[in-house]
Length: 133
Image 1 (tube, helix red, strand yellow):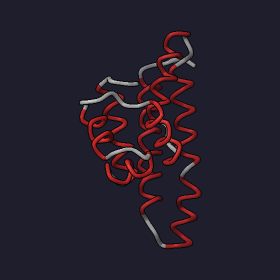
Image 2 (cartoon, one colour):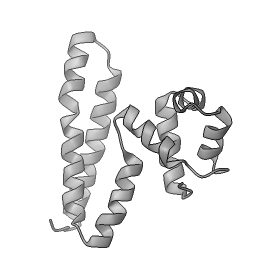
Image 3 (tube, one colour):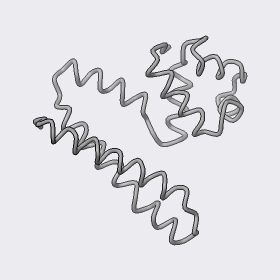
Image 4 (cartoon, rainbow, N blue to C red):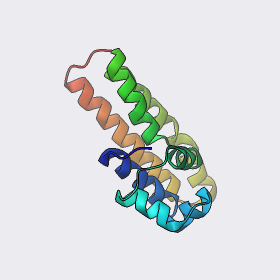
């Protein structure tokens, strides 16, 4: 179970991206009250719930935070992790653009471009700070 504000915030975003409390509760096979309490902080976020929503959405923000904790503990370079995240996000753009061209639907392309832009900006900030690989 997780109960930190950061994890709760990330979980809340997963729930919103999934379609809201009702959709997430249906998918997780639990009550809307359970998901609502997890999002609001009245209950700790279930590891199972977080992992299942991450897997369904194809994004792992909570898992990445937990991996970052381990990297920080064992001294793995932040720059390498930031660069890897940027490469992952950039790699999601071409399929979304192809989908845009094929279907005319802009949502996925906008989402992937915004995520790639944010990852590139994070990499630029890390490079400007003089981080080492």
